Length: 227
Length: 227
DNA sequence: GCAAAAGTGTTGTTTGTACACCCATGT
DNA sequence: ACATGGGTGTACAAACAACACTTTTGC
Image 1: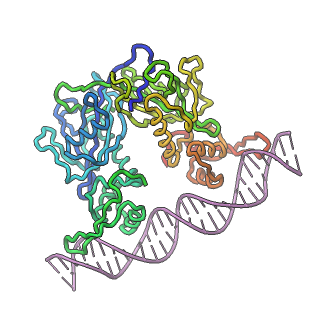
Image 2: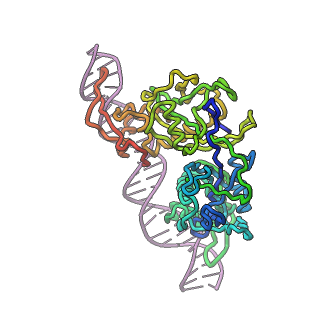
Image 3: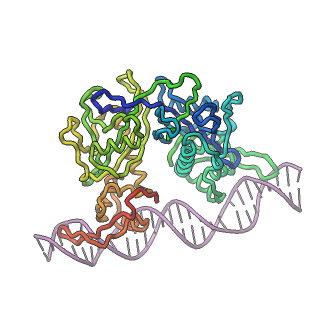
């Protein structure tokens, strides 16, 4: 892409800031929207929880770096991943070196993720609604991701990336409720999902527990669709 | 902000790409949505039209660079300005140096802009609907900006940044029609604008031309508001 | 038979869309 | 008087929100 215009005919290149790619990896666990955090070792912000991220590798595109980060942390690929925002304020503490953070958000099924147990970083899921004070301005980044996800949920099928191929309508509704953080009416919810053509019945049923079996549904398309 | 996480404990800093800030400056001239373009002198893409942009100055935030660029090109400040997207693909032609472009879009009143006449870059307005092949991937950037503007128009008051303090409902409607590229019903349009509380009558009227004078309206707030 | 979740329809309200005529002014 | 753009209301359709009971299963 590289829409890079260099306009200063002279010596160019003010400073060349470090470019980091940071990924907000979101999932729904039970009825809770969760973010993947790692524990920072070194300063700045040593001991603080933070979003996973890293510097761009040589010759790597931004999207590729985000995909790589996601794969590193969770072992997951082929999920919904979207650029969020680029933060370019100056660090507060350490003025020494300039940093720019290109942030992404990803939606995964938590039971697909293989978090690295061995790691010094202790990657773990944290409820997006009860986060501690994070490193840098990562709290703002998470809030931004949650806002974006909430609005995308209303006019796209991104939820597909949070659910297995087959799921019940109740599961789907739980995902929506966890993300939007409000309860929804079962009948209206079903009507809407079906009439939008987002999902379709698979014909099979899930028998489990002491109650009526539930129809299993699939997303009409497991790729991003704007309604 | 600087949500910069450095995760490679080792020597860090893959490569440090050039960071350019590029601004899509949009306005409505008569019934046409227009973009400000400059003519590139030097290669790459010498002689092509391009979006105004430049490298980040030392110690400058991204937003500040965008504001500065806008001021340089148009003399205008205090208008709607929003980050769009960060493009980080590798340049096609010149592989030598890596570039990242953080793009913004701005909305201004064209009659407020003082384009630099002297300049070798011949800054000028071009209809967003009939653009030539631009330098780099700037065509994509403009399309992206127009899409974003269209959707923002539906749920925010951003149009304030394209109109003078006082304006008629017909002027406002022309702005909407130019951006959305479709005609709208006068009565429905008025009802909606007023019932959303976006604008309010100013009490004064504009007498001009051989017809009934038009009520002048003002935006309830001349700053970004989400409806 | 009872507990637990699945499934299902109707009504009222709000929102959006289509559509045609009269009004105030300048010439 | 006529040309020009400014201003107004109503009727239909679609989308959305509120609401409660019956079904199928396991124990």
